Image (cartoon, rainbow over all chains, first blue to last red; front, side, top):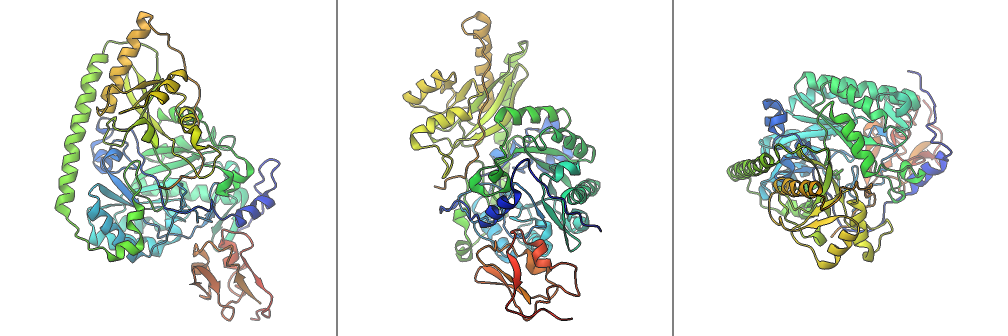
Length: 516
Length: 72
């Protein structure tokens, strides 16, 4: 194969200098361990064929509903990668960062299997084991499949999944099927090699480094063929795409059509994480990530085509736990090797049955409130932020929230549309005194914020910023409460008591996460 | 000559280990090292040195001039 030496030059940017900076970069240089949690589609049982719902209902990364109740863990057994991406930096030694490709320690397949059983015995919510790097699982096939083999023996009820760039996918399809991997995520950022050349400087293919448009063409062919082969075998496939403004943002609508037509079940469009301190090519070249409105507009544009995933947390390749928590520090290699593990399948089943009941109660509460909205007809749509610790409840204090869930409210009901991180960062320029400013910037597109409790000062500042703090639904179901509030809002607008005013845009946080 | 790995730049991703046709690469003290006696610079195997081609950090797998050029 002819190797092209096409340089993927970003406009006016000195790539040579940036590559050297990438090589020299050593992460953000602070210590501690952390990570963030799950993701999912907002689709519920009513939107999906029964056999697909059965497959995804306990999978936090595939079902938005499930991520309130179920946890996943990633084991970092796959450090090698076969492509280079401009949004990734393989100098992954900052333990504080929460983004894909970052891990604190690498594991052997044997250590990984032990860790999975230890975590599953401690956390009954843990239903899913993923291998997502920090490199590419299929660039480390021996380690990846050995890990799956060991886990399927010791913890047979745990679902296996993997996340890949797709380059080596076609050649490993049969092995993936053999180990009963039931979910695969492929990161597809383009279907046009000209666009791809701006995202991928090179791939390693057939013992050669291939650059530019040719590299992107080979990558794209393998991604799409791999996707087709997976869906032919009935393996559920999610596609991740990184939204890079000015590079592939408009193009992702085309990607969405291409992956839908090839049988992808869910599309997850994620914002580019790009800060200079990450040491990525995009971070250093000043490539910005999208704003909250830009991201939502693109997700909305694709939603007519297929289910969109709205709350991927872009978690680390060694994350452990539920939404808004990371418990990986409890399960370091030293600790798990000393743990006495009692893997009790029965107690895990009992937990999962209890979750089923909770889910039914939550849906019933929402439906009841929806009945009260019936007959209302208004073009008004608003966003509301919710402080929650999970389980679909408004159960977090405003000042303690590390993130807010965002719901879109209209006369057709409530819809989960995303989340906003508001935690403090080790770099990024926000001081302690401006915590509230950070929160307001992150939820500035919302009309209201639902909290379990809120102090007097932030309450006044929120009102001044035009965001209504709502604490009257403390510890109640999110969607039921939000619909109830929205109904009252519409009434106030109708009676002329208040005027409906559109909100501005909001910020997507970029910096590295501070560990606690 | 043989290739060597600049330890301060190595991310320990292990990609080179699997690609080396001579099994000359292994992990030592947290990063990867090339055993010069086993390195053939991929001459006779591939057009380009595999460790150089697969390494995610530029200028990390480099020629070690303290060894004579490999002869087939």
